[in-house]
Length: 512
Image (cartoon, rainbow, N blue to C red):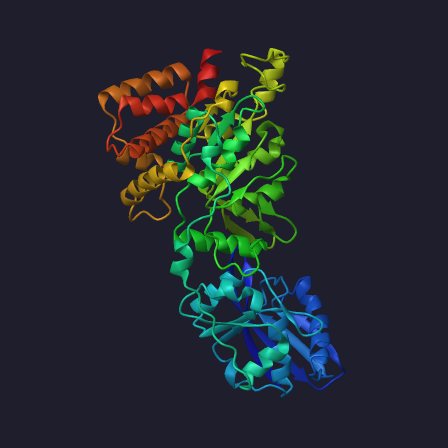
């Protein structure tokens, strides 16, 4: 007898429908899985056979063939355990097939018949809706995540016995519903605040500009100046996530397996801070079984690279494409995958190996050649892709013990939200463009009108600082963001002048 069960598999961060065909025929007892199964899928036959026996069902001792269609795409993961088990019960006559129409089933089965969560449940639920399924059946731990998808009946089961009781009509599993609007309306609970940072008014202003326009930023200063402290507070002033951003970010973390148990959506912008010993595959994604890297896990949020020159050169160079395109394309012999990677890069570094070059209190012990060699670890093309280069000085003792209160993250975020609202209105109707940092050269010509005084200032800056074409565009984007923070429709020399000040490494090269 033949049984067909609808399921799904993840490819990249999206899922596609898979039809699990189970055939039981006469012959010597065997269990064959075809359709390019890989790793955990092939091992599933051992889990399924033990789970059926321990759950009180009869395992058919006949010739069993399981086909995963389409057969030309490699299948990974343990999510096919449950549809294979249900297919065996249907094909052997132990379970009616009537209630399987329009249902998509995924889940890993334990040896006792218990169900365990799988990765990518949100992507599978979206694929089920796109395929016209009426509902999806997932393990209980995945139900909150899958229930985010509207227009789909989502049910969660804890065991194979409960699934069979539901499909046979003995005990229905209730449909789980999630109020997405209420989840998105919940206020973010930040554990850090800019009010904790003493002094550093210039650095706070630069971070506000960076947050308002989604600009990449590099903080340069001596040890203990507060570079890491400032960068870790950057997410606290970023604007709230839209539903579209939350769904895409959740899909990435679901596929990577980093969602918390019972979590429905990622409504807080991620902050990722990998160690400088990370590999290029760990940063960008990939591996034998491709997984999202840190740049994709930071999608919609902040990727913080502390001690930037300590990262290996080849690791830093792979950042170029995602910084420019907002997506990571992994091409392998068997498959090509794309992961979203629209993140803000925040990096920190010392000005020299000892950290005290240019410091007014401590003496620098580094030779000029050592300083040059240290800074050359970061290539010019990568620096060009970082909009803001900011020098962060050491904090004076009087500022540390001063009693004056500092501005909170909530107050700064209000200004950032207003600037982002102006940008969303400006870029309405242009998909993928929602912040000034993402403007192309054509967008700059359209939205950054240059007066004679502004053009004169820019010409002098490009000539004296030797700015590249990309750096010139970065200056215009920053100036547009500064104008948005002041709700000014036109660029002025003051906006452009402040933007030029945020290219400190360009100024130092020109001075040298």
